[in-house]
Image 1 (cartoon, rainbow, N blue to C red):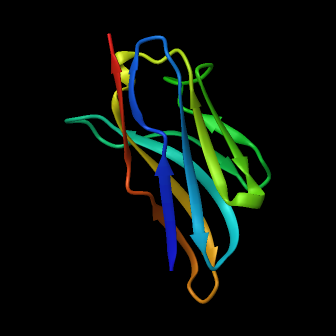
Image 2 (cartoon, rainbow, N blue to C red):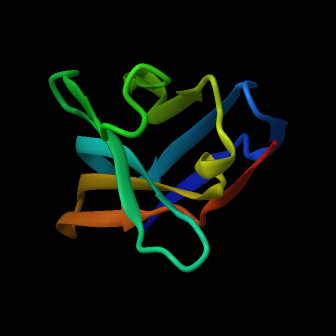
Length: 120
């Protein structure tokens, strides 16, 4: 049906950068929004930010000025550029997509998650 495949996680020192990618595939009629969440151990999953169809973005206060979400519409791919990383950014990062899929209508889909670990 639909797959969201994430890549780009890993281990980085505090102050460093990482870029995550999430590619959506399947019989996608339209992408209404794509975004990123994260979940640290023992904590609830939290929204990092989204990019909507028109291109507007929004971010959680905790990442504003450090993280940037962008997209490549031709590739159905969303990116999360993370700069000035802090140990508290350590979490599993999940891609999220609000998609209209041929034959299935509009639904929300999740990627498998990718680990980001920031060492102090």
